[in-house]
Image 1 (cartoon, one colour):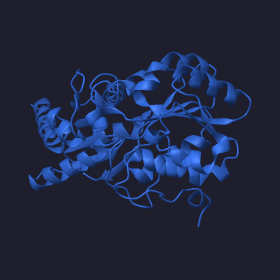
Image 2: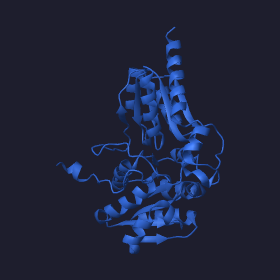
Image 3: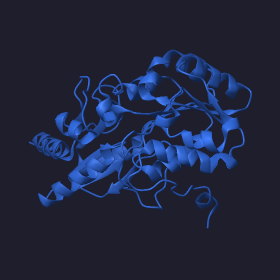
Image 4: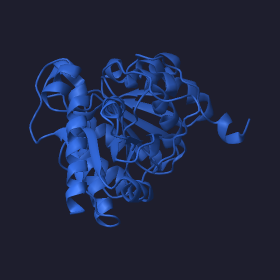
Length: 328
């Protein structure tokens, strides 16, 4: 077995676990490898999965209370003296502390990892006040900040190892709701790299987070209609994998981008910016159309706001039609 394979953590959650639970269990599994790792919590350890770390390593768990701005600044100071802080709270509360994330952490390029649960409509019944639909855009715009949104429990484990290895500030989403396992055990994660999960020649479906599973379902539906859809898991939103996108543009000629986020400033914006500078192509956007969410079960909300597989299918057919029109 290679040294790289030795460093790949085994899945410590199970299919159906939420991404937040997989994250908390992975932190426990990796703690011995990172003796300077400390976890900061904003009084929501039960909701972020870090209750596992609190139980296993109470001396390395710091409860800041409901004081997210202070928590971000504290983490920056800890990083300055050689600790490896992981800041955990809900995504909407990360937005509350955006100034501290920008100035205390990113401006000094402090080695702090911000890991947010409860992103997007995946939050479900907690409703609009808890559904962060702006976090990818906000953190992507901060200089020096890496932005990641894993697709399933296994990728959370791999990405957690990767961000602890990376020297610099990171923002990573997890997720509140139970999630299907979609990636093989031999799947490889690398910051800044997308991965083709399904080959295809007619259209490329680019997705992150919970939308990856929906994109794969959409590709199955399209296949039944004679459409060959490539599926790309773009779990790193920043830095985006520009070379892969350009390759997909040359080989398929059109795109659908799917994310559990507002239509402005997230993965869709990153993909469009990259393609505009390399191989301009028709792009359709599956995202929340600049509105707040509401209370409901995650799959019901995905249907209501046009994030489910049928909406991706319709967007793919539209993107293909736009591509064909350009040939006329």
